[in-house]
Length: 120
Ligand SMILES: *[C@@H]1O[C@H](CO)[C@@H](O)[C@H](O)[C@H]1NC(C)=O
Ligand SMILES: *[C@@H]1O[C@H](CO)[C@@H](O)[C@H](O)[C@H]1NC(C)=O
Image (tube, rainbow, N blue to C red; front, side, top):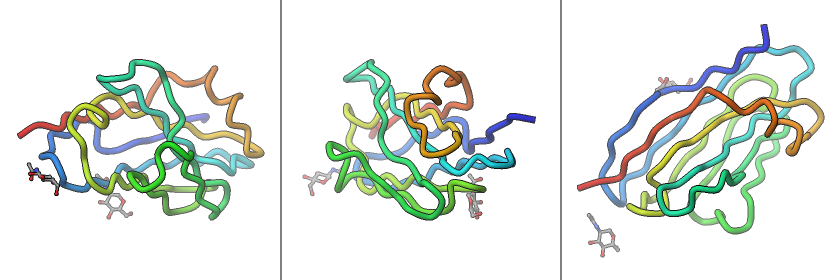
């Protein structure tokens, strides 16, 4: 099946804490795992980072705040280094795709999703 799994599904965390979001799939030939954010502050869906095979890429505006580890063929981890209240609270979507195709995956982006609340 074309399923992508993400955990956990909801998170309540304190400012300045760090958190790791897991995402995995078992889709043969898919080599990229991507994360998108829709934050409370900016409700657009923004690409944060992705793992293409074992090569991590963090989009320029997210560098220093996010890190990616793992393998786009199997399981990857989004690490949020130091949570900020307004910028980082919101929904995180993970997606899997084939051949580095960042744009393609947007159309299939429904679930899974993590809701993250950064609050004292
Ligand atoms: C995320 O993956 C790591 C490594 O496989 C595992 O130890 C951890 O329990 C996972 N976390 C969740 C929330 O599933
Ligand atoms: C988070 O870190 C900043 C900068 O180090 C500090 O000013 C602030 O008090 C910290 N907030 C919490 C809730 O720890």
